[in-house]
Image (cartoon, one colour):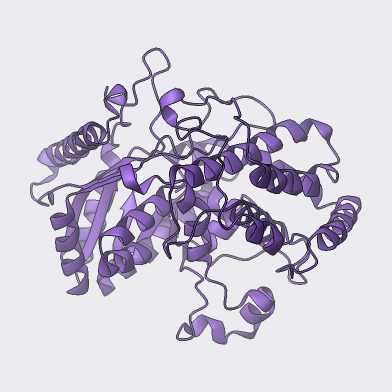
Length: 461
């Protein structure tokens, strides 16, 4: 899981200065004058726009054809089609609330690009006839609310701006989702109540799903291996463990899993909410990622590349990884644990010369480690390959640019998941490579099957 947000992270960092926060507060006053019926969630960002929402209840982005924001026009195509007046108004409101407060004008272009992408994505979704889970239409007000609410929580919990308690403090190497549930003993803590304040009942899991769901074209999406999914659910309910070895394509993959599982059944949706995602520590420090991460079960592990990058911090990071392994083992011993991990260690990258998107190779040592933990737990642990098709949802730049302001994209697109047959956990050390090879092969086979079923053969390597 990695919702990398270089653009907005830089903006939020710079916005934490006193002068910028003051300027943003002035923007909030202007926003309240334009939308007097709106009650902001928390300073410094407003979280809703009822007037805009009401004005677009029955209006879609009529000036956008369904495929103008679609990936079929080419990954990372940054051209922006004309928005309908309602979506244009919402987009302009969001931009004006931020850009007039930016201390560094150079940040405006990449930030506005991100907003353009999101508003265009939801406008395209609305024009396609997509609906929210409750059957309501996707509106400009919804896009504005989602964007500003997310930035608001990023400022508050990722930077500590507007919070008397500072940044949100994650629970060491293993974090349990903050869902505002009454039966969660953690909410009895006075410190946590003080930290969350009026957000103490906020479901941050739902926040992340609500942000990305409108950009998912469910009519053309595909879920394969549902029998395997139900078998895994039964094993978990019986107190056994399940580990999904997945390819990783989008920064929103956890939300992809949740939103697609929810379309299968209530039980599968519940399974999705219980999955623990193996992630890098950046998801708990990146300001915009923080709100999404607060709503996820996480096991934070430093990658080998990250550990070796700084020799001075290598011992501390290694100790953190050992603590993460210990925490995971404890969860596996308890039983009923579901884990999602990308053995490749990162996202799939497209071949710029062909446009194909192969899945990244599984790392043998990573697979070995999870098999070892499963065996040491003494609790039956099952392994399933999970194929993901989500690259177009948040397609990354083809090349990482130096400095601040990496371009971020959001597209309205179909998504897909295939849960392959369980890979038997058999064979000794001398044959461990056979297990990894089979898991990767089945993941690749499911990936190709999804691409064919979703009319995306152009990505098949």
